[in-house]
Image 1 (cartoon, rainbow, N blue to C red):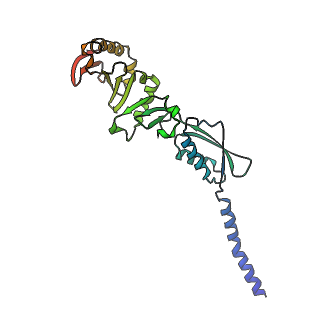
Image 2: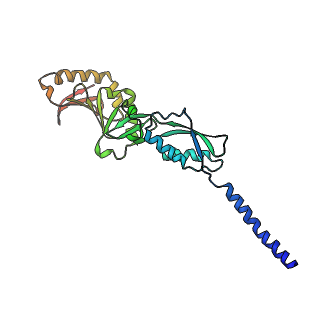
Image 3: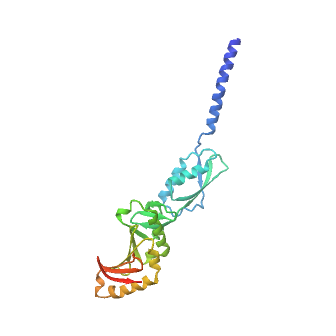
Length: 251
């Protein structure tokens, strides 16, 4: 009898660590969570497809206790065009209130690439088409569009700020050459470097020189020809027809 009691006590003691191990693991179970989307979320610029993907992602998220920040990070990692996520616990268990803030699309690049105000590159289907109709369209040479560099993003943001797209069709060729196709005079193109293009466009010297070229070249019998104003050189601008340099103007 005594031996049986000893065996029973021994088995009971063996189960104690198992019980506490199970109890500990139970605390770490990621329960299925429910997210209530805040109606004040700043996501009107997103397409219905994007919103559906975000809601589907949240539906399948299991939030570990006390790890809301981790959940928010996962959401932004999956959808990089969401610049801010605010998650607050609801009064019901495993129910959370979520508020989202989306980036603002600021430029279309080529056909289907969109640049946001936080330098995020997305496809155009991410956004509401009515929003995309209001942003400028820039071009990147086909051999350079695979990876849009930080310098290229910075340049387009500056051109957007200067409203240069109102007067020119702008194409990024590479980090040494930008082409500005004059909208009013299609036969005229201005060449510039990315780092100095903004200064050139605002320069009264360039504006006077452009008017001179338009008067002498674009509104005469030579107006059917293609002309370029090359501003990539220090203290000078070169006008040429095709590949042939025609005039050197020093500042």
